Image (cartoon, rainbow, N blue to C red; front, side, top):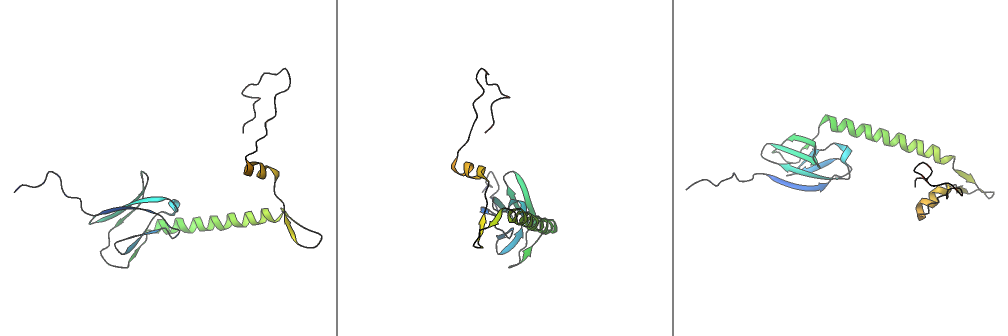
Length: 147
């Protein structure tokens, strides 16, 4: 009896959307993934020794496979990146809140009335205004408004 022409494939592969907790579960264990790909589909490939996670062509995690059950395997870089992303998100929320606080006025009866820029409504309804060139002027790339 001869061996088959190619070795049998050992392990598993699957595709999942990475959740907000930036961990994927493989065979009962949780493996961290770089949080920059949260919300995207990642491809998980696990063999007897390694667990690799890729987003497109980029490897976003590579761990030794653990044969224990209910273990969380975290890469220190992933934890640090998640902490930085959370901090940046909080700072952005605070800046947005401060910026939007100036865009609220109080009605004479006391309730707040939000103020919105008119171009926001143009974008929402797909309205784009273009000014025609003055009479006698041929439109060129520099005189045509972008939009």
